[in-house]
Image (spheres, helix red, strand yellow):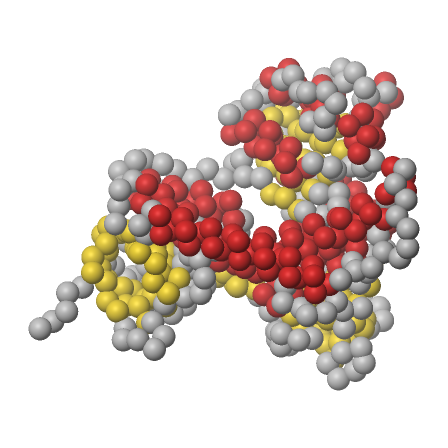
Length: 471
């Protein structure tokens, strides 16, 4: 007797921020859902990215606050000591709590979870390889591919997991290195530079572009560079690593395109991510891929094959967890008959350094490239009561608007609370608010968001707390 093949309304490959969110969304809509994940639900974001990095950063920030406690009239007697194993144990505890929470959500929403590796046999049939079990076949009306991405290495600098490491390895360190070279000064590299330098590691940040955070507003990136130098992080821009020698002591010596070689205990590479689209049988289903292996989708998250959708890093769009989750919701809506589309115009990006950086919309450089006639309003946190109270004075809010329509074009922050306050700018851009409308919102006093009001008012030269010469 031929065994019956299980059939699902929606099957999702990959259990990261796109996959598990899509599965729960589909279950909410009454669909029979199967989620296939080869590891643990949560994906890179939970286990090797967003959450572990923020746990590490929280320890770094706490240490920084303790060091500055005297300025607040609090004297800590004795030597401040650092217990790195406890820091990592706390990180692991957080991951396990959140991982267990995701499993509980999947179970309570009656999502079938299969731990295995899936590939397409055709546009409606999947084969699942499960370790130490017979392969399983299932069919599905709709398929969502959410297989994510992995750290990219560099030719001649392969990851060995010990001396040359990626973000997949750095959160499993059992002891704190004395020195670290970080290749790549995007948001991930900058976050790791702050986290480890504050914990006492001698950090050198190497970037091939002319400045750190290449995609950020230049004025904001330059302010962050100054903060790094205050924290004694060495920054080398316009610099490439040509080769690495792992036989020396310290373990890694890197040779650059200019200047003297660098030596450190670890070389952390954070230069980008490669898309996980191989081995999925996409050719059998005739799903089209781009030049980087990205799964090509339209604004509905549809591929070229009806019934097959993709979301998250596998699409090669903005590789951010919140983008992946929104893409998955859009895909599920369209699968289930509710028209929806993915809009990338109001997507925030955050860098959790100290001070943090957050941005949404156009940078000033992009406005210039597009030939836009724009206005800028800025406000320094140093002039804000709430920032003075907190003792966090560095940074500013910067708003950009269209001169003719007054429509907000960009919102950029470096300073305390940036990663929370950016949500105001995200909503403003998504709703098409004008700078005047944004400025007229009443914000609580004393609070950090007051800086947003002042920056918006500064577009018109009417900021109350900005000295006349600085408007």
